[in-house]
Image (cartoon, rainbow, N blue to C red; front, top):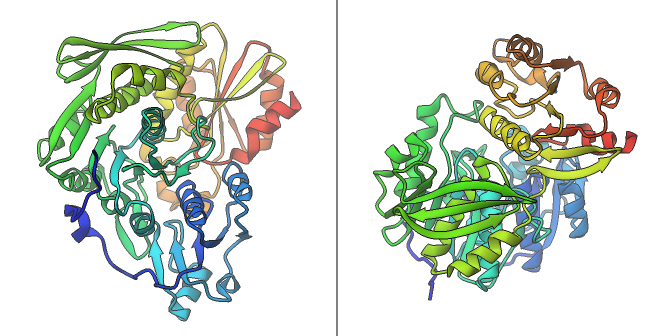
Length: 485
């Protein structure tokens, strides 16, 4: 019997800025259209609260998701959205202290919580949190673990930064003891600059990767490592750290853990290893070893080395929780993936359109590599929008030039909102296209999405795979392309 945790060692790290009012009916979320905030809104509505929200970036899939939950969303931020005053306000980390609703919140002295604080109070209390963390792979790993637990009859709660196809929603309260949540290293709120994952009281942490990212809040890799080191150190002695042993930084930092450690990956120095990875029809087949001995074989519809690594971490967790291999085999084989992760959007006139959330250069590289291997007999057009706070900065300028090998044609637009980035720090799409061309790739630059779409329609032909990568809506390029085709 898995029992909820009490007196977790991370409790002292969680600032108690405001307490939840005893009489609580109406909760307002500022920045509700973020994937995490939207799923929290769903959890709160399932708990019976009246929920409203506001955001300035309202687009699918989160806009449709909130609409399906019948949660009203105000377009833009205005002081009047807090009138009449809600009982509690939850502040997303996209919200600045100059935000009109944040200013009004302060003036009205309404009770408020950050998003991670609210998760801790409304979702993780009396649960065993399973925190999936790392620079890459959090969403797919979290979705797979939730599906494994569901198949094992454990009725998990979960909150995931994407929409798992098996569930068609990215949150669930769950009556079981475990709650699966992505542990993001990004900062908590404008009034709390610590990483989100320190609020989640992990019982088990899966650590997929540690790389430099979020250049808008982290100085360098060492600064990033400091945050992950804190996460490792708050996993309790009776918990488990499941560590990607192929990542040298993780292997080094894991040594400070107070709990049991199990490593996974492809290299021989891991406890759990994936070997003999092959393709058959629409499935990837994997043989898994534990401590050099045969453990099991798995068949899955997901593909790519990065996804196989994520899957292996999920298997380690399943075994820790006592699941038999047949249960794991069934769950893995029936896992349908996550929207916006190598998702097939549609096919028209023989042109297959895929959507992926990749934005960090490593994620772009691994996604292009995986799609190239999966569709090896088709021409691959890789379309990338530099949109994240890090990708619009030149910190990754040179690395992106190494990320598109395998693409037969690469298309890059001018990034949006560059005026928000200091001139000396700005990424250059023109320079990336020049660098790719110099490396022998066929690459093109476009001033905007409309011109890119026009070129795609001229270029695309039957048999092509168009891989569209962005961590935003990309001007609805996917559906516009299919519609025009």
